[in-house]
Length: 171
Image 1 (cartoon, rainbow, N blue to C red):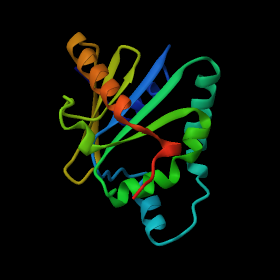
Image 2 (cartoon, rainbow, N blue to C red; image 1 turned 30 degrees about the vertical axis):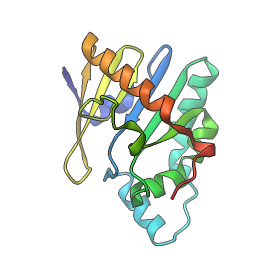
Image 3 (spheres, one colour; image 1 turned 90 degrees about the vertical axis):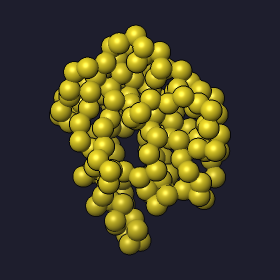
């Protein structure tokens, strides 16, 4: 597996031919870009979500070119504060074409998941690595057939059990 820095991951995330799959397995994250926004949300401050515009623009362009984005959040219920915040801000991503499903952790007890969150760009898996408090500490990329098969099967199983964002009732 090849290590990727955050800038390398950010440069690669929208470069694929067919499909981007993203599986999130943690109940809480503490990424440097999200922590201040989540704190403002918790304090009841408004957010115009303008910070999502660059991502949404790239999603729109890729979807217009016939590419697909699918994202599954495996979540404990009731939702953690992080996921309640996340649920409140993903509207622009969905409008841009990022298909998002919410999957109750209770529904996936018998699904085999990899040890880390991942993004799969066609046949390249990028594993996301986090510290115990949720800060991103790096990425590794793999084109190993076993990793591809495991991640694709895990994603598809979660996807089938998930509820589309527009239909999910956050709690």
